[in-house]
Structure formats: structure tokens, C-alpha cells
Length: 303
Image (cartoon, rainbow, N blue to C red; front, top):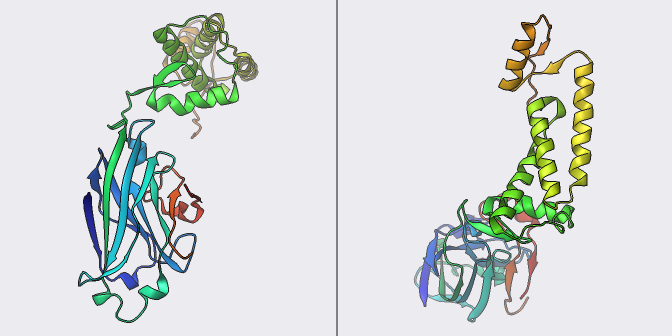
């Protein structure tokens, strides 16, 4: 088993959660997390073993590990130890440990901690590794049959969550074609999310062509058609009021050309800023490290 030892100085002066230095095992980085005044409970020291930065690992990663903790004083005298546990670490449960590791009353007994130092050791062995490696921006994942970049996964998932039937009639099963379609759809959604007055005629025309292409390809995009109609109507109102916001180079060229024909254009230059025996437990959140503002909102579950 791999052993990691962590000596904590001035332990009695610590009252907030803190982390050990990272150590490697099973193709990823790990660390220990200590709650000196308890987590969930307030009468015990809480201790957890975590996979560091779980979102940097490949989607679907898993690590099954055997581990146990030993607490000692400065002289090496064993103060407390846990039984050996075998747990599965995943993106949903990147940390396992004990809410009730050791009663605080025991730690506060005179002479229990020599020189106010506590040593924590973890003995661990990673026995199963699934999807070893780091996630990159170019990694591809499959969402509802579409191969998309890892960085696009959340956006694509939201589309299918809000519009489950969006691609039920798609006519192509070719991976590359479907990926191209999805890239067009994501770009179209981004365009139509902008303020109507910020869009140029060229962008609106392009959006109409892309919407037509996707519809012909089998996508059900009535919701985007309605959005485009609203944008076109709003933009026409702006133009009919005698002015149009010019923010794109192609629009500027158009108005310069019109000016040569004695057409007066007003340009708006304003820009918008846009208990008892400790029981091993799991943290069920994703991005836990160093986000202290979330610590009071942790939720836990037992395996």
C-alpha cells in the first residue's frame, strides 16, 4: 500500500477546513481534507480522502481504492485508526471519509497532542482505474448520438433537456455530418441570444440560412424560428424609427456607400456593456477544492 504522512502544526489553533499537499496514485492526484471542528457534526474531527481537481480527468473516470487512516501524536504514538475501506471514487463522489473520525473532547484532553502536533497517515491502494488521463478541450464525448467537444457537452445537454425531440427526425447517421450540424446549431443559438439591435443584416440573413439548412436536415426548431421572428420584428421597429445601431464592419461599409447617394444615416455610437464507530461517507459534489463559500452547503450520502 502507498503511504502518505501529513504532520499538522498548531492543531488547536485551527478551526476551519484545510487540505494537505497533493500526492499521486492511480494516475491522478489525491489529498486529505480535515475539518478541525467537524463537518455536518460539531463534536468530532472530520477527515476525508479526495481526488483533486476531478473535472480535469476524462469524462466517466473512476478509481476504486482501498484505504485506512491512522492518527498519531508527535512521538509517533497511535491515537486512533480506522478499519480498511474499499470505495469507488467518481466525478459524483470524489471524496470519501469520516464525519465522526475522533471526538473533539479527546483531542482537547491535556497531553493528548504533544507539542500541539497531529500526524495523519493514509494507507491506500488504487485497485481499479477507469479512463486514465487528463481531459482536454479537444476530447470528444457523445451526447444523444452527437459527437461533440468536451467543452460543448454542457451546452448540448441543455438543448436536449429543454427540447427532447429536437433531433428525432435527423436524416443523417454520419458522425461527421451530425457533428457539423450540432456546431451550426450551437452557433445559431449563440447568435440569437444577442440583443436584436446588436445584430447586423448579414448576421440575420446567415441565421435564416442556417435555420433553413438545419430544418431541412431534420431538426425540429420551431422555438428558434419564433426567436428569429421576434428578433427580426424588433430590429425592423428600430430601423423604422429612423436609426440603426452600427457595430459590424460590413454595416459600416453599407452606410458609407449609401451616403454617397445622399442618404443620411444617423449612427448610434453608444455601446451597451454588456456516532459510535465512525462510518465512511461520501461528498456528493463536483468542484469542492478551495471553493470555501460552498462548504456550508455540502451534502453527504452513505454508500
